[in-house]
Length: 360
Image (tube, rainbow, N blue to C red; front, side, top):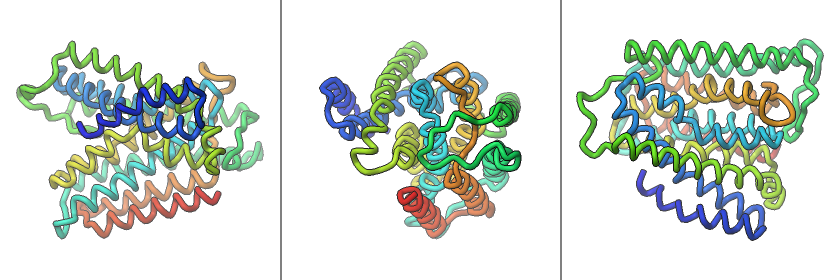
């Protein structure tokens, strides 16, 4: 994790380039790199604060701040009315965790081992939730098609003319996902099982930050993430056009990865240490948090931020990516063991989706 802090050098660089009205592509990519260390700092501060607060409050803190970078980035995009960018980045986060990160973890962890083992019961629980969430997220789009109120939105088409029915269905789906997630969180906090491993140490490690230090650094990280997110979102459209890529592709494969960099790194590192239970919990658990917590929150926020509410109407590529990632992750983790060959397969699927999205 500490190695990623070296990327903090890009924070002043991104600000300077933005103030100097430099190339949008340079501004965008430096801002994307600058978000990584701020997200890492936010993750570290949350982890240390959770260690001091105990398992109950710790679980709530992890949920509240675990996806804060993605939430902040998406909030700025919502304010500018970039709903398709928001949805694409959320899809990118889900497939990035369940295919890219999980694939790298299996390859790295299984590089010198024939196979690695993990808790089948816990992994089945998380992967099933991800599968259910993925199918739930596409319900508004199915309603959109069946009721004849419109067609699948295009890859780069910003649409705000959905019927009130689609917005209502989006709210109902979001409320259902958030409600199910909240129930799982309550059960996890009370019973120390479910979505999170809530078994605490008797005492926090000696090098754990104090509450005051954790809170101050968490606040600092929040301000930094907010600043870099504003720069990132403000340059995404011009940057994508200047480099010949669609905002859709950039949102899925750049923005969708930047905010999750800290969790990506940890998942691979612990897999190398043969802690696959933790690695899969991070990778798949993050996808579940995004699908069942972050997406509903952003749907509700869209009624406050920006000129129009955000309907959960995904294009065909996003639907295919969501469902295929959830189904494949469920199949690969069903046996309670993993190999580097399975990891390579996940990476191949992610690369294939990248090629398809690039040509879309």
